[in-house]
Image (cartoon, rainbow, N blue to C red; front, side):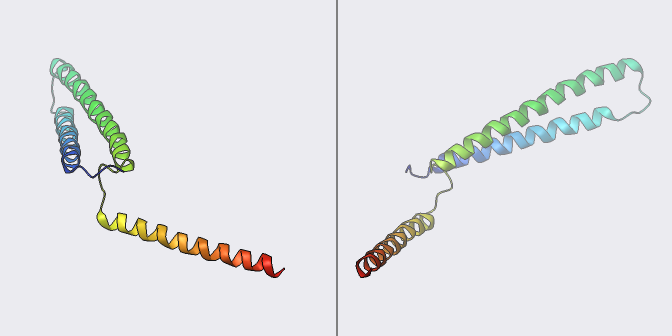
Length: 116
């Protein structure tokens, strides 16, 4: 299993923060542009274009977050992020306990067969 890479964890956190900031900024611009204050149709047309552009920006940021989500899952499964020593110790203890139980079960089964 690979070792935990703190730089990779930090890079993921920075990418999440960047995408979140982009989503917030685009949404803020859309909400501001959507306000109707008795604007004429030329201003409304320009703001409609602006809303379309920022909607595309939000879609791109959401796609980036989905890709990042996939990368996070892969890194976690490969043990590159989110690892902890306690988890490794628990896994080793669990494997040892499973071996003890398996050996005891095997011994019990052989006793039952020999007594029959």
